[in-house]
Image (cartoon, rainbow, N blue to C red):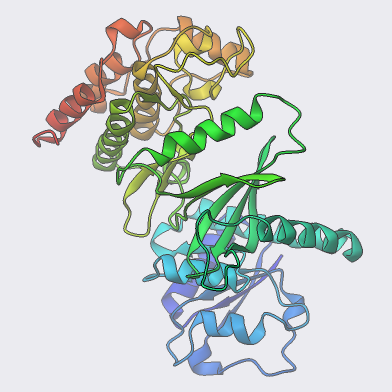
Length: 425
């Protein structure tokens, strides 16, 4: 694999080269210093590179965004990872709109993360090159038409024409929905749009569950919960518009290693988010690191309320005896398909807390049924000796019986605040 690294810091380029060489011994890295070499000419051959690592601040009057504008349409221009030490939501959103494959803060880079990002964007390019172009175009056009038909309710300019969302790119896809990075047309705000195909939904419970997700998150007003922007149904689609997170999720941070202090801090903020939804009678039911997101100011928010439920909601949207949740983080009562309340979310928080402290999950197995069995029957794992002060909190959160756990998020907040030597918030 060939990579071109554009940065004005020789020290950072040397560090990046070492990181890549450690994870990818066969990689070839070309260093390009724009201060010394200037801007590439029209005859510059971009096609020989598989990935471009581009700094935002280039030490000249041009930024990495300017480079994207100038060169993105060049023949063979490689997929780009924009790197920055100072960027915020604007830089991230602008980079993606201009065609960058990824955006990452330099402070967040590790050997593993850098290698994963490079391999991912290189793989996407190879996949695109193997596709027949006529087959790719209708897909893009179809997605653009989807977003063109989705329009915020009550948002009409003086001429009476509704204002909708502009397609940026598809960023995720599940069994029943597609997730887009999008732009609100009237103010160019970057956001995330979750879209469901009404006509294509085969499971009769998909639409009610989607509507319930929109209703639930629209009621919550907390800095620790994803900001809800808009939702609705058109003739063909249902959609939920939510804020865009630039600093990734907790899953990535655990993979890179979380300090003990950060583990307590993150768990506290998760508890604040749970307190906000539990106060409204909402149970998340799928709390996991991948659903815990970070904004540009590093504040944390709970997201993805796709299988959440109000405690007073007696509507059954799943098959009798079916199990909802993610096996690694599922509570015993969820695993047994029995009634759950807020203590189920606290169990999942305990799994996450253990994982943050140790870097590994409390229960591991070769398949989902064996993993679920451990949540129901296995002993609560012991923390390493150096973390023994945290064992009482882990024991209370991972108790097999909900009656033996923290009863509320406030109890967890008090316990974590005591560990942190601070008054509870």
